[in-house]
Image (cartoon, rainbow, N blue to C red; front, side, top):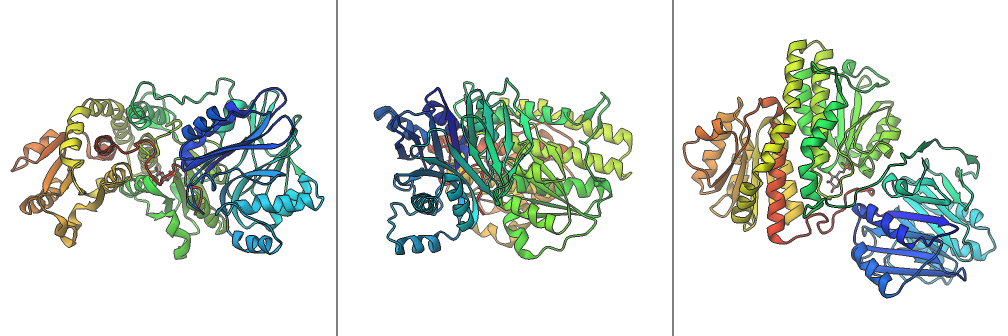
Length: 611
Ligand code: G6P
């Protein structure tokens, strides 16, 4: 994972810009951070710190450094603990390198270099890139020749940026597997892991293709293939008003801000699909007729996977199209049988998750038609798929996904309605009715947000003191139980499990006693009586029931639950969009009471770019 950045200019000190870029990349990892610049004598100067970017900022203010060319890194540790010694840039007297990804053959290269008398200071895989580069430079190669030689030795997935001693006019970047963007700015050239970091500095951006490398000088950036041939990669202009709001707009955490943005985000995503006022939906132009596919194969990770599970219920129900859902990390290794007339859909907030990207490439090699559903327009998944559905969540900084999830659900609901209509299963009036239900969601979400104090009290009194929590749901809200449990685990470090409510009697009921809160997602739909039976089973064992549902359902309860969260009464179709918010809020407040790092929980990263 990790985020990398490199900046080259003639006039300014690049340290503040590198630090700003690292803040924008911190979602990719926050175990340690570092930067390297060339000082006035052309010597490499490094500052590194274990922990977040703020720790690096303190280091720099205690021991300032400046330069007109430099590279920076924020780390999610893979090889070697998050110590300062393992923090990037890794350097020799001739070169410093920052790396995102994993160099899979680093042991072999390291043994080779050790045998030649080379010494290593870190436990990282990345250091071999610096040592190899040093060796080739020492042997008399130019930086460009040495880059090709280094890239020829490395196996695995990586994006790299090299800074060379005595070369204030040069930065070299390379990519295989992990993303790397190049930006042309005003009297400045830069490269970085994504458009968030590079965009604010650039007038235009291009993305390297796999196995490309790029030479940045004060004049230009020349992109080359692995054979050294100069190539042009499509560039896109950056909106001159492009700015990333790194502020929390008065909210205590990014997560809280992003949860409050959900009414807007759902409305924005929907409005990109609406045609006219009646409620007709129009998906973006795709190079294939989605409704004619014999099967939809959805692949994703984490919260995006839970969105895909809801999508399966919706699409099978409304469009009668068979849907398979897979975790990307499992997908390729089970030798999936792909229908030649099927379409594969890859769901990802970032569009960069390594497992999902690998799954897309696997499907490409099997001649599947590829569709991505992403929140980042020029992400790798968007660029490599044949067509893209874009959510309008905007940048999400909280590591735990919230607004991106509800935006994905919105897109999937719209997709299901559109497919149902195109396949002749939904009449026009019914289509308009379903779309109206979706259009009402922002208002319902806004209302749920006003109930935050009720949810906060339940989190404080019932959830935060618990050791284990169960979440139960049925049908299309079963994935919401899974998502609720995931949110609680990752934010508050409380053990939680999501279960299909009907399964509780096949094992999890053994866990239930008076210390275990059981959150029951119970909309008053056709499955309500069934979930009530499951709830009774819990209550009979003394479990603390937290009822989540509407007033009509609440009135049907025979006994008062331990706690209740009463939500708007909505059509069963849209309940997953309604339940998403209270499960997020419940986990958020539990984490706040436990005092964990809500926006950057331990051991996690937002964009997982290693397999
Ligand atoms: C990480 C994040 C999750 C996210 C998952 C998939 O684990 O912490 O919030 O759901 O990656 O990410 P993607 O960008 O592919 O949706």
